[in-house]
Length: 41
View 1 (cartoon, helix red, strand yellow):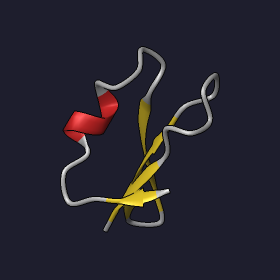
View 2: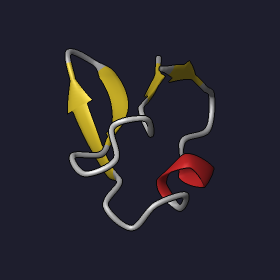
View 3: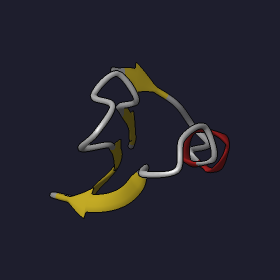
View 4: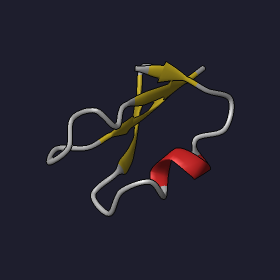
């Protein structure tokens, strides 16, 4: 998982990437291609 300060570029890497807020942190998750994960905050 990458820790980034801008997640907008990571969301555009794959069609199925979603931005999710959990416990005050912002995550990029992808159900179909699990390598695309990132966290902010």
